[in-house]
Image (cartoon, rainbow, N blue to C red; front, side, top):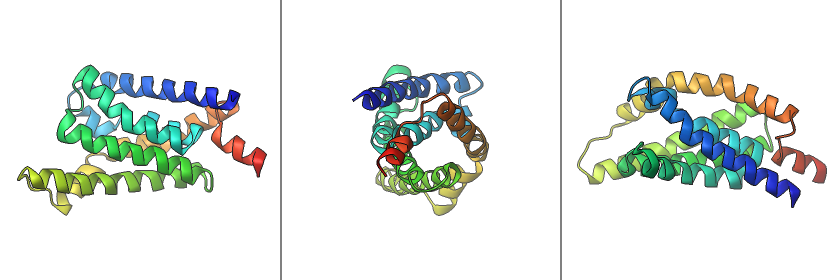
Length: 179
């Protein structure tokens, strides 16, 4: 029970960070969110330190809360797409980190989330009559977002290591104790 309480507190902190970080980045310009991906960082961290369930819930709720609280991202279609994209980030990072190192878990989660984002953008924008090609997907998901991807690959492993040293690494410890 104590471990679950710690996970809940850590997930709530990730949720709070996910609401605050985008505001800081958006102070530098409206496109900063698309470039630096500040909402993605806390969700990935949540999946890594709390496990797939908490990471998935955090990822699903965060864009919705942010949309209602700050208007960013706009709920449709961006917020809706992000709800599923970030949910996948949280789930996949948590699941993979139980089996592989933090870098592989991050890359796997980022790729899986982007695939979900591409599929949903194709469907939702297609229904609205807005073209969404594979070229647009690659540009938005990898070229425009490259600074954010680099930040995630550099910052998140360091953050997870620091959190692990201070005792905020719950999910992997639980498996190690029961395995």
